[in-house]
Amino acid sequence: MTGAEAVVKGIAEDGGLFVPEKFPQVSPAEFEELCGMDYPERAAFILSKYFDEYDKEELLAATKEAYAQFEDGDAAPLVRLDNGMYMLELFHGPTCAFKDMALTVLPHLLRKGCDLLGIKEKILILVATSGDTGKAALEGFRDKEGVKIMVFYPDDGVSKMQKLQMCTTDGDNVNVVAVRGNFDDCQTGVKRIMNSETCKTLLKERGYLLSSANSINFGRLAPQIAYYFSAYCDLMTSDQITFGDKVDFCVPTGNFGNILAAYYAKEMGLPVGTLVCASNKNNVLTDFFASGNYNARRPFYKTMSPSMDILVSSNLERLLFELSGRNAEKTAERMKALSQSGKYSVTPAELAKTKGFYADYTDEDGTVECIYDFFMDYGYPMDTHTGVAMSVAQRYEEKRKKDDPKAEPVPMVVVSTASPYKFPQDVLYALTGNDVKDSFKGVKRIHLLTAMKVPESLKAIRYKTPRFKTVVGVDKMFEEVKKFL
Ligand SMILES: *Cc1c(COP(=O)(O)O)cnc(C)c1O
Image 1 (cartoon, helix red, strand yellow):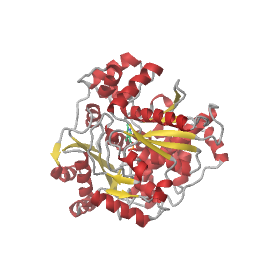
Image 2 (cartoon, rainbow, N blue to C red):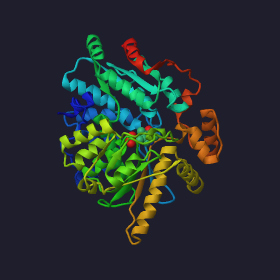
Image 3 (cartoon, protein in one colour):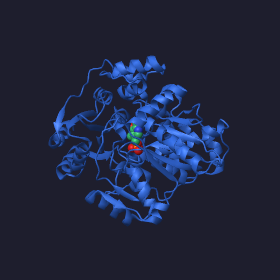
Image 4 (cartoon, rainbow, N blue to C red):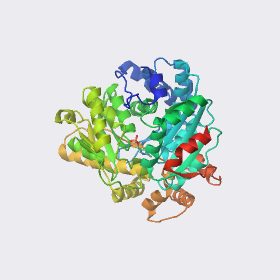
């Protein structure tokens, strides 16, 4: 199995996820090299460790092109706040969420992968989204040769801004369809299409292969590893740490993709202290790390951090694999239990191996309070997902000090996953207590209040007319795929 195959296939025949055979290491000398590089070079360096059959120069050309689309010339800036914590801002890309970090690169990995494997067919990418992945995938694949991309989203399950972003996408190879139902209905619908014989026959007739842009694709995971190394290098080059010092990261988590990339970075030799896994009220992961029991059969809450409203965190499968001592059979059993009964457990010995993680959650009030406090105290506006992470990070730091008052301080990097302007109504509410109906009114008020620059990509869609208006029932999704091909 090569990196190219993992990216093109997306998921193994038996439904399992692809993992690296071993974790490539980054040596101290290589660290030194990394520190002298800019972001695209750092990203290409990390990618080449996993995609060793890809040409290094071509990888670099790909990351350069991808990250040139980010505003202000730095794709992953590290910002120091006055409370001593650091924000790793990953939202300066074309769609204002961290999904851009990987989805601007994935099309290159896929196209090059097809070349390496001698695949002649065109690629059809089907995406089920709760908002952020959809737009980032559309932007990543729009006008890319030999690819068509189709996104399904729940008609009532995305924010107004997310819907407008998706439905105004340009390009001849894109399609966006709203589904009457929730995110799970979209996801089940897409899976059903992917597995149906009728669909397979149709695709074969038309000369297409099916692939996925969801976060279970290894091609989404790999580019995410790079920014953890980059943040560490930035701390080194600004003399905040010396090589070998540990750094903690706090990640707002949904599908467990972003924080898993941090874990992979640690396995590659990055000196990571604790990985703080922050959840909202859908705190299935908090419970898992506390007890070793994963139970998705619980109430589902719609929160102001919708990209974290997830009860089945798909990428946790990759961590389970490591915890079990890389036992594929045992991992498959647990995944089967999850799909059949909604739950599984790990053994106490396996749970003990997760002590590098600390998991906690924040409710809606805690998120609002944190966003308000941080703006008032440090003048730093955060989006709702980042607010969850910051609130949990603060609680972690307090606990750490209480447990061991003499402990050496460890730098805390909080991963900021979206621009405050992407969730303007909720952010404005957190900052002022005011409700506005119109997203752009929210954008304007946040701008007046914070003077933070409004991303060009959001400005640009304000007066655009939505191109895509189709709304279908779950049973009509395949009809839409047929029309599109
Ligand atoms: C997708 C997303 C998350 C969750 O990331 P996972 O990789 O699914 O854990 C958090 N915040 C924002 C803004 C997102 O779009």
